Image (cartoon, rainbow, N blue to C red):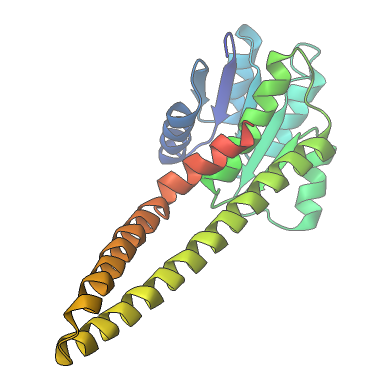
Length: 223
């Protein structure tokens, strides 16, 4: 990616820092700018070109809806996709209001990192190709597929972890019985099964770490 500017608008400095850190971790070659109010965002947009805007709704003086209306009213910025972020306005009515004032997307907090990054990457692919990412239905389908893949991966990993735990417990029981009955020939094979199963279980638990799952899901979304 190149020559792509992302503007984050939020009156909470911690939210700005968290969003910046998340984007910088997973998306390279983009410039990230911040504004702590709707007015400052509009002032920034008067002087700078932006490819994508992440806009918080609940802000003092000028909220996200009002800010979006102003952005949409200017010929220079009306085509810039706006992704609304909100912790308070979660009802369908507010979601409809967000799309009515020009939002390309509407996400409720707490934001799931993988979901947000996948959406941003989708928008940025459109932008790189010189297209306006206005087809919300296509974007929704793509990001939904990624979310479903993430859930399926989690289910498979959980099932594998459970199965390995059963194998380990069973092998330990067999190992104890073999020791008690002095069946040394079978004991070595049982110990091998237990050892391999424990190594596999440790590997599965590593993959189940949230960060690794996010990276796997993001990798899948790029294919």
